[in-house]
Image (tube, rainbow, N blue to C red):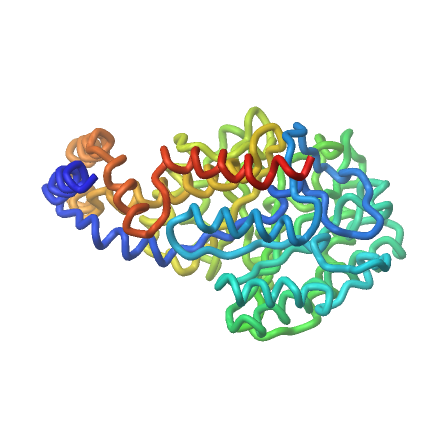
Length: 416
């Protein structure tokens, strides 16, 4: 390994790129690992309903987590296979509710103290999400934008409580917890009145955010969407709606790679939004023809997004979370592959000769800029990634397959 790495390192050095320096930078970039890949977005509420509100998971690969203990064990294994130090992203349905039925408008910080204690032991920070899907009060397809005041008030209470929980997490772990809000509200066919639901939603958000918390404890993000299952023709929380609300009210825009038109560039939005917003939250996923939440692979979209993250020189202002769920393959493998893919994209971006490329661009030498962009594609990247994994004390890609299959044989197979 050292021989191949040293050869690659020498090649990068020709372009004034220090591989060891890139390792130090990458090790400081955390991914927020999403808990819902482990159990197909089921959660642990006493009364569970089927997935609804624009959420769908396909596949029935054996071995999914059935309780909190199993999910934590799986997450522990995932962290062992990732270089760097990362976070955990929880949804509200993953609380520890005991034998009692606790409705969404009744959840409290005490239901997540077990996760806080676990996070302290594991050495990770927490992020949080209100859960406005898979509930009887989403039957109409509307939550915070519903014309029914009682429905709106129910979900307003839920989100207010979730923000309180997020603040408790941030305070307990001495690091801001990002609370992200996504709602499924929309219409399958074209509505006549597009204005009123958005007015209801704006008013609901204004009520929710009246509760103030220190930014050292929690930060708010809002996640837009182009369309979804049951909202093919109209989504209340569109990109324009949430972007406007975030900029006016100092909230964080959340951009999910699967929530835009397939021909739109999420990467291009990053530098534009950062001119006006202090921070951005990115949800890394892969859409196949639509927002299908496939496991990310090292495709052009991931590479261009990670390039923009690095090139912006605003790494500390860009929060990166995972958001996919695939039940057709080994769930631990899906977690690990998706996370490592994003880390590879970031490392590739860090290894680009940015100084030379910017110098060529600023001088008007666009040929050299293009040539450098192409040249770096053929410099051996694999040995550098393998060495970074080795240096971080985690398996290489080839070893990960063996680790995942061993865990499946020893742990997951016993859950059937």
